Length: 226
Image (cartoon, rainbow, N blue to C red):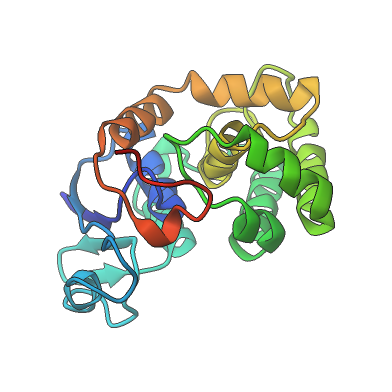
């Protein structure tokens, strides 16, 4: 059985991606959460992660004596370990496209990441409206994401056919678009709906909404309720 170390489900977009893959394809794993500290550079989060990963970050996948610490590398490893599960699309052209768009998500979209941190339980429509007006890089990132999503084979389907690693990589974007109520087109809303109906996505979001932890440095747009 795999062990997957993650941080808070409400905030940790990189933890979300391999977790969704493991859950969606029903691969046996043990979830181990190391919660973020309330304040930056306090608590034992860094030490706890360093004890398992010299990189000092989550997610981390443990498979016996093998430790993997990059979300895309974790998913690639799982795909190779379980070829019969088709974590990547079976069609060679769709598989190539899925790898391209997953890699683009892995390395890009800094405007969206920096402006709109993942916060599943928050409702920040007013913040989103202001960010949309003031942040050209954010608008460019969302436009590119909408273009990628619009090229999916079926309007009511996933990015490259069946649910795959590519969809897991864009799952946190779905939550960001919801949290900040960013203006998107009908095709984008349809893809968001498709993702939100996926059982693995629903499980993650339910877990996020059940969390009580408040991490101050990840809550720059709102105050902790009394």
